[in-house]
Image 1 (spheres, one colour):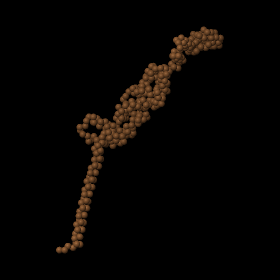
Image 2: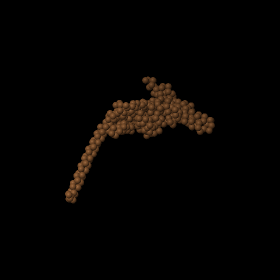
Image 3: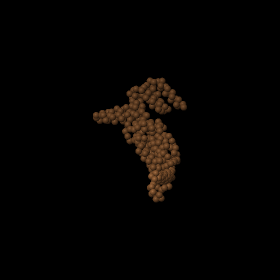
Image 4: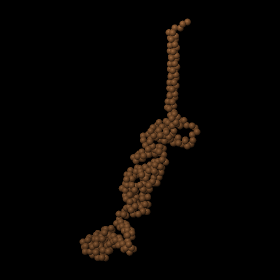
Length: 365
């Protein structure tokens, strides 16, 4: 039987088409299966990310805490999800850390309006304290976020070059008096820091009265145990405190003394004696200098000066000098009578008559 070549060719083409159709169908089914499987896998991954983000990415407490610096509410959700996955066999140390992180994030959620609290910015906290007062609740939340030990360490490390950090004592439970001597050292050597302290820091300090008294105590101790130059600087510093409204009875007494002529003269005498002893060539010269100075000191006393003038025969000068003595006790009859007699001896009859008339009025009264 002869086969027609044309028919044979048709059969071959038909088989080829059928094979290609089967291949396309198989490929299509494979693609559908692959796509379906991929979609299911992606869906599972997505659901895992939504409901268990910390498990999906292996987040740690530190990472959650870092997230709280930008979004405390989201960090709180992450924290809750984190603790829901905890093993019951958590160590005591880890448990305390977890609890601490929770308190920090929760405090941040309550202080969302304060940027320094969210970012844990201590400098921002200090700027806030320079213009705001805080109540006990706010103080508690701030300490939860920053930690008392961290703030105290920051205070100790920065006080020597930034007195603004002293305002942290408004939050901390430390004794503000412990920092008085350090502050005194700074304001003694740095005028700019002194102005900043008196104009801003001291006014915002909660326990400023206690702190000022402590500073005055250290100032007085230094004043009592140092040389004249340092004493002068301490008195000038006290004047700055006084100009800002803060006073101390001990320094007020010293200022009153320094304003008296005899006190100034006495210190001049001591200084002169000291210089004389340094530059004198021999003991006799020192003695001579001391005698001269002693005479000058005595001559500065009004009564002694009056006596010297009277003995030397300078009656008018004696009367004028004695007049200053009478002015200190104007109702003393004996002194008035002596003055009248001195005026007579000096030939100052009009002045003498005035004194006698004054004595008559005193007796009539």
